[in-house]
Length: 116
Length: 113
Image (cartoon, rainbow over all chains, first blue to last red; front, side, top):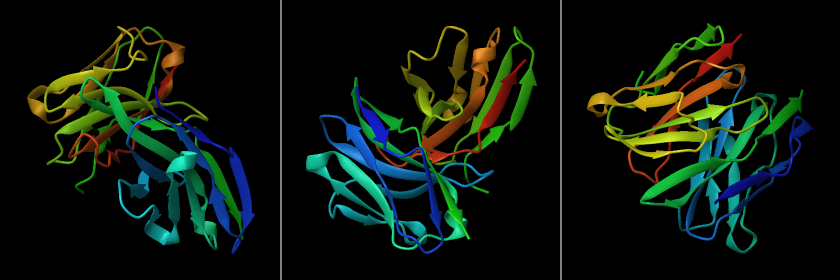
């Protein structure tokens, strides 16, 4: 069974600080990787995704993530956070679950609070 | 608005009552998924449809839960004899292909008193 581990439950940063949120997954096969964001009072939105190719992927709002296959990691980064980045961030893995199906597995999420 | 929509957004019910939620996926998406999210957790997979066929169910989906997707369009999730432990956010998502990006609706927040 696949699993996703997000290292930090709650991260507090000042505006302009750099951000890195850790994500490790456990799965033996080919996976698609996602970061979703949930702003206060809003629904889950796709931030970025990795399917194949360049392991450094860029998403919306200046976010990027790097897939390191040997470390089973897909860490999210942003060089300079803004107050509007305050949200909960979820890493997710979509791997083949058998019986012809894929299953999206989420981490527990990291709550980011940015202080103006 | 061409995103995933869910109805109702909030539902408060008494223990033992039945509730039904509706999800309307993005129109061209033939894959539809239901998830449950509790406080402090990420969404957990419940079940998945390809068109009208329910192809996979999580062991989280007890026999009190049933989901349908008649005609391969909207879907309903029914919970019978609700329990306090059913209190959660129920999320619906849809995708074009099985391994593709899933787009989420706003969710239905269920509170069982």
